Amino acid sequence: MTAAALVGPLLTTGTAQAATVNPGSLKQINKKAVAGAQGVALGWTYRAQKPTAPGTITIAVPAGFSAPQSTAQSAPGYLSAISGCAQFQVVGTTAQPDGSNVIAVAANCADGQTATLSYGNVTVPTTPGTFAFPATFIPTGATAIPFADPGTVTVSAGAPASLTISPATSTIIPGATQAYTVRGFDAFGNEVSLDPDGSRFSISPNGSCTGAACTATTPGTHTVTVKNKGLATTAILTVGAAPAEADLAVTESVNVTSPVYYDDVIFTTTVTNGSATTTAHGVTAAVAVPAWLVAPSASPSGTTTFASSTGVWTIGDLAPGAQATLTVSGSAGDVALGAQTLTATVSATTPDPETANNTASATATSQQLPATVVVAPDPNNPPFLDISAPGTASWTFGVVNNFNPAAPAPTEGSLSWTCSTASFNPCPSATAVETANTLVLTFTVNDFAVDEYNIQVMYDPGPTANYAAAVGSLYFGTTNSGG
Image 1: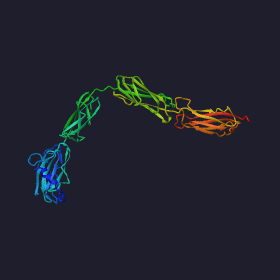
Image 2 (image 1 turned 30 degrees about the horizontal axis):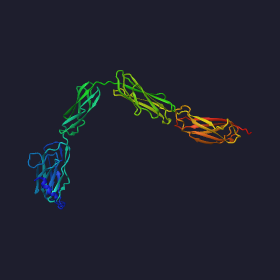
Image 3 (image 1 turned 90 degrees about the horizontal axis):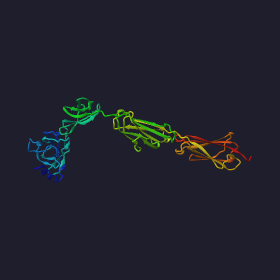
Image 4 (image 1 turned 60 degrees about the horizontal axis):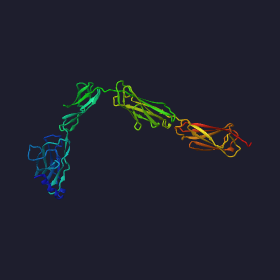
């Protein structure tokens, strides 16, 4: 009778008896095995605990383990039972669609009685892992009760049976070093840990190895051998001819290091191939143009090209001793930004034996542009102010850029004014109106005395403005025609 035939009908009955039955305990005898091992002894011990009842024990054996059977003692997976119980007998095994098998054991044991179910001559899976053997007790006429401990067998990788070395093939220039990685595997291809101090590397016909890194200077094919606890494997290391080298150098200059705001600024990048015999291939330079530079324009020499969006100057091939230049010009930007640096770094696909000269930079710092304070008298003001006439006299003072028409007009800062007389008498008060760096001073004419007046207007741009401070003066005299 199969386990399914025996167990199936029992699962359809009620649960009243199951609630009063103790299934007892079922313990795995051997919980460890090596991947792919044969002839392994597994099994379970059973102990009945009251209240007891006759029933059936089912044990699920995972796929990959020998199919359990009770007919051929010398064959793999043989099941045998020993007990002092009234009954403890294998009554069937059933193969499942997933490759697992179910063992069915008819049991009738009194409280405290024990039994052993041996599962012998087992071949275990070749893949490491922890495999569960879930088991249930099905009291006669009741539903299944799972055992508290499902039981597991942990399958671990076996002893190292082979090694692999990576890279298996590689090429270096004379005197260069190749680093290697070694891995171990058991007989079934499962990776196993190796003693990191147990691997020994050697190279022939010449060269040397330090740890897992090997080097050689003689061109040709070399064999790298690694050994670990009686196992060995090899890799091929080819030493090629030393590649041609070209020493590239870059220099950077700027036409003026302290330009006045909106002065012309020109950065010049020069790349030179210092080799007398080797052409440098795939030459490019990363040129970081500072955003401070107003309206920058790039001019690369010859057939070279510059992408302003990426800052990449593509030079291409550079013959022995040849040079390429790139000029980046623009106007000096805001003073508030401080020192600004353009940096260029050159590289190539041809090996460069000296990289210390592959980066260069130049710095410029904007200075304030001179400003001018100008005055415009009211059209009604006579050259000599007659203080006997009624009304007012006005002057308009403004800040202008008279030095570089390309620069934006001054918009920052503030205007203030003072007044003095030749007689050292006080000046009359005035109405002052300031808008957008323009100051309008309006006086009542009758408030003046006969004297000579000097009105000074000061422009204060602030500490980080693009224009420098400036002073404007107005000189005029007064008369009194009315006596």
